[in-house]
Image (cartoon, rainbow, N blue to C red; front, top):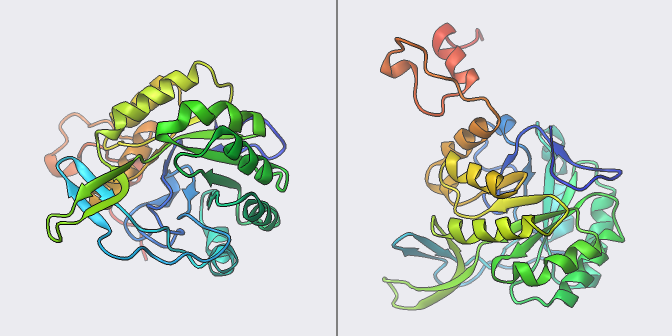
Length: 302
């Protein structure tokens, strides 16, 4: 078991240090037929706001040479409708559920935390902070959540301001720091010719976020989760070596969904070593114990 929050009454421990980042697996209803959720540490939900948010208009994805810019507007029906629609599903999932709450206003955060506190299907909150937020504003939002729930309040920091606000959110009671949200960027859509601003995803985010994790680990005394630019098991291991206790994987899941599962098995010690004399169709990099057993014994009887 891996402790991903600071010690406390409802400390959160996971079987695996690997999870998908917010916005990747929906509310637990996406990729379930493709990815084995049982090998993941937790489900981090899509971003949720207290009130409904409409999707962004215009172009939403701009392809870059090494990644993409994504602009969605964080569409969601609001906290009440999300809980009503998905709480039964979350109860049945074989892993803890971390609800990603967008930090809009202290009042909305207080109301949201109070709602989540009585939800047995939710194990923790991940509070997402806006870019360019001040340390004082970040402290207020985190404190608003911590005062209304005994569940762990994880805080996802904006990459460019992580150093400036980390101490403020730790002082406010954050149980974990997620380092970090994808950075903001602008790219030109080659089809429309328009400049589109959104979050940047791609391998080049890794060395930037990795450096931030490394530096924060030297001065912060609560668990850190590394996020950004992970496209292979070694990328995730680099975060662990830099001081993170767990990782969140994002964009690679959209282009190679099984890679999330491969990374999870690798960091959880579930990858099968190639047997001597194994034929090419009996082994592949990242093969797990379940898959290996089925290849030897065949599928279970119906």
